[in-house]
Length: 492
Image 1 (cartoon, rainbow, N blue to C red):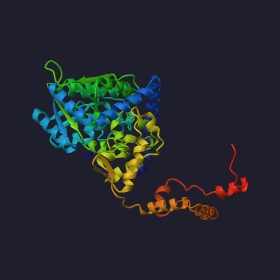
Image 2 (image 1 turned 180 degrees about the horizontal axis):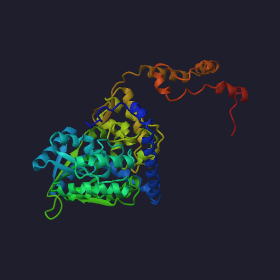
Image 3 (image 1 turned 60 degrees about the horizontal axis):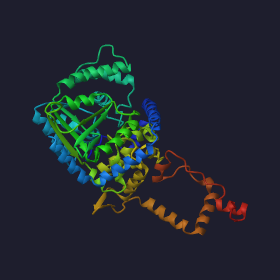
Image 4 (image 1 turned 90 degrees about the horizontal axis):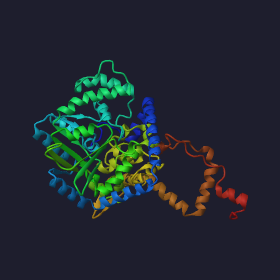
């Protein structure tokens, strides 16, 4: 199971609190609008963007259909190159494997490259419980860690913080984690970046163990790829003696030719760059360069079950670019913390409920955390139809819970609860099947419209709590048409 942020309520409750925070809304609005404008300009430079997007979709779908074969190929290639492959069925097993590997080195601290997979499984907390301290080295992740906070964005985990807040965090917390912030530190970006660089440099030079994820794994050679913009990843991947990479099984691509597609679409969709400033690739170990020991932990943690769902498996195409977050009106107002997961925004609303199931209150609420406007699908570089999956997962929630697998298919459990909703749908179906009853109902609704409430009673209050019921017209359309056109068909 993935880790749910402790104490997080369902999305509607968390979002209601978040939208009342004007500072948070301002930070999010400024950041998301800036990022998406730059992304749009970067994508517009590419004349064959639609073809690249389609190629990415096809490569991902092909890989997922044959994932068993490509994972075996990865294991064989990594082993042949001097690395060691470990298989982790869930978060608990992955944490146990990584903790044991770190303990075997005799070290009590590690440096980390930004990794959503390790956040998903709660690795930092698992290491801390065993007396091992993990240092985040990505600037935004460092801010989150020093502030005892939680990430709220895939690309920019500290997007909810402004420069003044970051300055205050550095001043008060850096000393506890190592080199203190410089005296007189201001909120100028260059000063904040320099303070972080000085703070992290001593950790890079001291650390004997590095932990990373990977953006991609090339099956034909067993090569892992990390793309980043700050250079901290390069330091973590090359300086330590031991490197441990925790990677979701969906990150595999078959060949280097396939990788070429994503190295064009990922940077433009995420950081609005033509290519990432740092693209690090490593294959096993070498005597003369880099870590002398390499361990690859292949993580399932709900991905196999997601793969079995013919509709929901689209979520596994995700390359973590965060473009969907930056165009989502719900995310812009509610922020990432409201999603109760390391995966916020539209992709989190479809990925988390599949990895964790829909048994918890928060996971059951996530498929409804959307207006279904479709903006997320339009910008997705691998064409994940997020609205389609959201509706699919809503059906699962309404039907009563998680799906069960029967052979190669996923089948929803028999419906439970929602009796009033089902009764209303049955009544509507009957009315639309009987023209006379429908006409009579429309006339009755029009004649009694002054008596209609603006909000619904009982369970319906949840729907009308933020919107009024649409007013009933003074005259049904059928009657208006009969009166004005004599019931005749219109002419073109």
